[in-house]
Length: 253
Image (tube, rainbow, N blue to C red; front, side):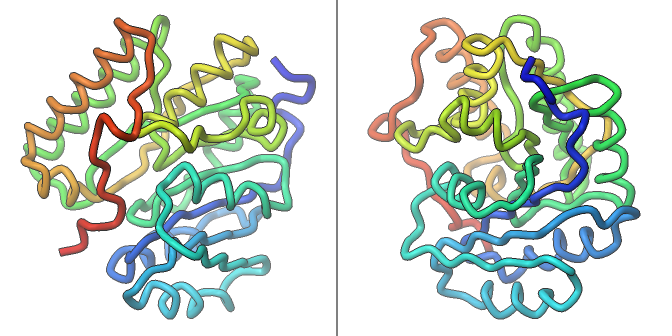
């Protein structure tokens, strides 16, 4: 556990990554406007969107005391985008969101309290699906159960809702931009195994769209990722970019 871990950190840098998210990004920005605490800055990292993501995002700037829009020169993937956001963050605590996520109005307040109480270095939250429905709820239950029950032996979490600090981020070298998938899980694995830091799963849910799962075949998408995690767990190896096709930002229909 690092010296201050996360207990003494008051303000938060919230980093939202986006690529062609004109239909979704207003959801997370509205959720942040309505938070019961306002102790954060908002950083949106746009991977050179070709839709109206920039216009929609900038329209929210006036609602936040501290707001920054960062436009990249190309779509380079989630790990690259999160790392660029962390580089410009002002505060010690880092909270990463994807653009198609949303949270309840007391989310920031609750995670602040739980992190301080449990003295966590990194954390994630369980997932729920924005669109709802029994199949979506069942998929979310499967993913959350996988994360909870394997936590003692396997590091997993959701990059779409991930909490760290600048010190931890620098210690583990940020999100690995060289691998094809599971850069969020590798981040947690490094923090836990190499640096003996404390990782936790908090109780507030975050909500995200299941558009990608639907586009890639629903249950087949879940089975695909279960197979990939099983491979990582058994082999101890990471999935390289040439081993998998990851379509970033192509699920907006």
